[in-house]
Image (cartoon, rainbow, N blue to C red):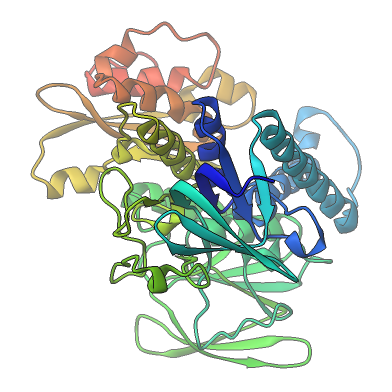
Length: 472
């Protein structure tokens, strides 16, 4: 095995492995280092997203949606199946199968693109030098360029010590052996709401405790309220402006003590407490401090506009650097960086990175919110269109939600959008594409959309920005 490469990447998550593939396509010799699962042989590629994040959680979201649909709504369609029975073990086996297939697929992509996979912990020794530390040995490698892509892990807080049994993180909540009777989710962000909705659909009594006054604070207030209202109908109970102070762990349950907005002490009892208060970059164990790689006050790796760190020849992408901790953000950064290293001109507009909450209904956003536009002193026009007025949504019994488009009042250029509703993550792509080319609400309004489709709601919202909505 060669010990010198054009590019060595530490971390085989979405940012790392996509960067590796693009660099290999551009003619570089590439090695990628991954420690996950390396103790047992070949490492598990795909990072947090594929192994314990995006993919397994979406598999459970889809399974739980089908269960809830069968239990609560099939009879409305004239389909009578009786009371469904839940088999958690089979559901988990399906989820694990999805993950295994995709992990194997990435391994296949590494082979296809002649990328060397190194199992172990990657450590930067200096410019152009990396050590891979395995279970019983270590080896040093040389590279013209080094990319840091180690990703992130759940944040743990002192008052809620994670034991993996009673107090858990998202890593554990995708693998429960049974449905908890009662579950408290600490943190009303994306991960907490998604996993909370999974277990609520399957029969758990779920309470969400959020420190801030609003769930998903990155959302416009009207969107956040609509999402909270919808999830409340599904059985989730919300306690915003509430701070968890301590936890008492018993043999069969956990009792949380918290302070609400009125300063009153309140308590919550649950079988499981899911801590979802955010994620932090993985910067420990990679030799960053020893190599002189600077971190910000927030603990993220400092980079310039071309992803260069303070150490010559070393770059960083994904969850390690500023910006939302999203798999697609890391992927795009990986592609852009690979092309920069190959001498090509490329940039990434971080304002056009979509953000999605994969509950049902989904919430998908891009660009600035209406509130942010007003804070910036911008005069805007806002177009809205309700799913309830969309023929396909009505036929599919998915009438909850709406499309919201924010456009500049003078130029009509789209500044942002938010969609709450069925498959909003798919609908948003059209708006992102138009925004990427500096497009306007009128550009979307003049596009012929198939009928009947959910996408017509996007066209109607754009028409509403122009004051000429057709079906509302």
